[in-house]
Image (cartoon, rainbow, N blue to C red; front, side, top):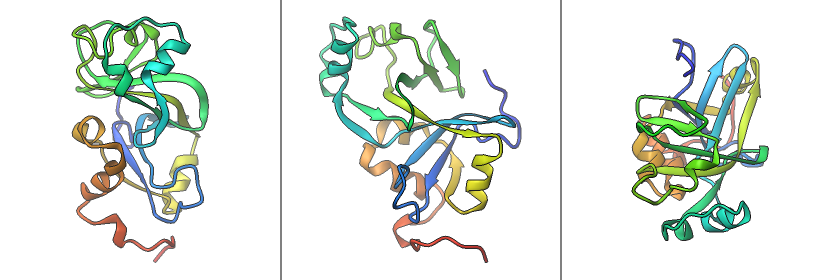
Length: 190
């Protein structure tokens, strides 16, 4: 587990400002998985693809007897390694081959053994499956924040797992106490 230093944004949301309208991050909510002096890594949690989990499992030749994967969309997690599958899930006592604890409630798993169990009694109760992730080099995210590209708020498990994907951008901004639709589409400094 990465230790969450006072300046770390691990287990926080990055909420794209409205001015990021011509960006891959337009209206994105990024869950920050790691953040330290070397850079940051996060996963966009509100961009479903047209690919259903069942299709991904079939492509990977992973047998999952549950019917749930037929109705679960795979999310676009970010522009880096779009062929890399990642699963954000509620933290449990299960020992998946490659998992990283991100908070007391959330873990990130990259091994395929979890895909065999999603939707079943042996799998995590809550999960999001993504392809790709977002990455920032040292100082890059801090500069984007200084440029007013992102709003920051501590992550909320309910938004990640229980809020419909198309409502997560608004719901995350509401954690800060305002309606993001009322913000101007320009950035600047006072």
